[in-house]
Image 1 (cartoon, helix red, strand yellow):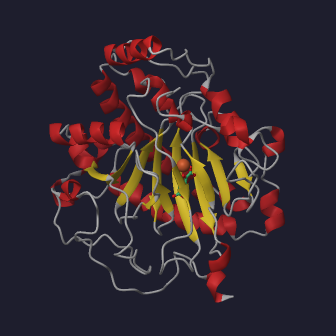
Image 2 (tube, protein in one colour):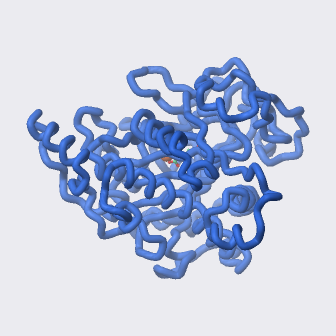
Length: 406
Ligand SMILES: O=C(O)CCC(=O)C(=O)O
Ligand SMILES: [Fe+2]
């Protein structure tokens, strides 16, 4: 059926739409040309009349150059919503020389966008493999969340309603040679694929380190504290994930990925079609996050809530059918999850006086100390808890009540 074979990467040539005043937070656009075209070529446009989430739009180059206003906006975004757009495009490529590029190392927005683009195509090849073959790479029974999860092999709620997506998770440690290599389909074992994954992981991790460095400073932690808990070459649950959701029949639509907060520290997400929704603070209405060309979406996970005693926010989100006009296409997204190193204990970093004060306020209000748990155990429990047959009740994170952040 044409409907199920059409994908978001397909050749449908649709005129670009202009982003004008349809982003709710206009202040976030104040540094950009108002008529900028941020639609994805070849895809039906995100509908203009659908309300969207008020994510701030930050700019990688301004953060790299320590623009104080941009750093303040980053802090605001991380405390108030825990989600923001990051514009990865290079505004002045002609002014950059090769020396400059070398100094930047892995922190290169344009190169990250290019890697993401190529990885979308690799993901299509992985999901195009026969179902029986993909199933060989589901390692749930060995206690691992890496590898494949089939359509409906996860649950979206405590009633056990099946999800409507398939995943493929690739371990950073495997690709960087830090941990052992997991069995994988041939298309992922090819030298070219592994090199691409490595490059994408390093570049995403560089963005994560930049964000961690700036949050470290704003929290008043000793220099390098947060980065030292997320070293690229230390063993961790960091992973790349492709999420693929086929279109759902109009009369039987349900969530394709259940409501959750991310388990780890910082997530870098590439979307082309709508479908991601967030529940804004103090609201009961889920709203779509509109994908923007040249940008990734960055969000914080529960580890950052725990490290900061709730000063930083990890927001609830989920994936549903794309909005009208996009809902007959297969949706795919690409994610990099940065998580604390395996042995890190998830607790408030009281070397920061802000965190210390927050904790003492919480203690005086009778809030108990957090459970002592390592990043490795926390992530394993939460990831496998949402698989069919898993312990859903134990898959919850810090969202349980914003007054009890951890
Ligand atoms: O597909 C998306 O846009 C979001 C995926 C997500 O939230 C997740 O995998 O944790
Ligand atoms: Fe998520």
